[in-house]
Length: 243
Image (cartoon, rainbow, N blue to C red; front, side, top):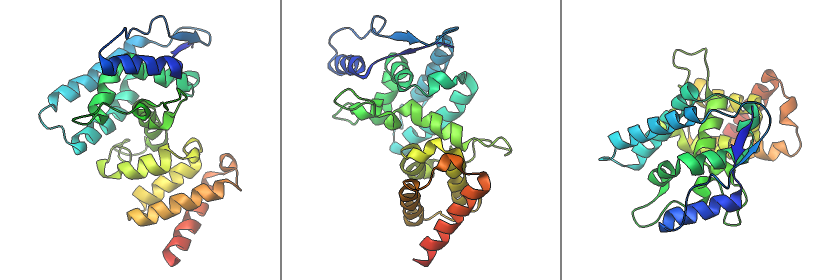
């Protein structure tokens, strides 16, 4: 399947125009198609966008940070229900930037803008230089939570990635870390946090998260089996508890 992308430099121009209410924000002449085969279906993206906007409109009278988190976490379910999963598109940073800029600018602003200031550039998944900072992108982080946290063996498959109070855990120690792409180690960490309830305390899971990150410099996580990953997390928890 082919898909559309948008460069960081062009995305910055569109965001600036959007914030300033000046210039043209149509990206038709800036987007590019990469890959082969049928084009990723934009009608699905539009349905996903409309679902989020509808939810935002329902909550417009109670826009607290907790409510914003709730809608963001709910978007994980809608992404699963409405979007086709395409590995080539979903591992392409340019695809997430394109989709965000074309269809979800209002959502980014609602989620991240303050009373006096618009959303920051990094909230779109970009740096001021025009390079990608994709782990901060609102749609990409929902995808990582879905990819890592979905457990279809549970009565509620989204049990572990729609809990609002776990935002810090997910963003700081799954989405932003390189081992987010190493599903066995990430799932072992999630199991320790949610299933076995062994790392509920913020200080403890932060310590373990830092230790796992340090360990990654000496160990290739992608080679780990599920059992090996569970053993590593267990060892780190015991070491942290003793310390």
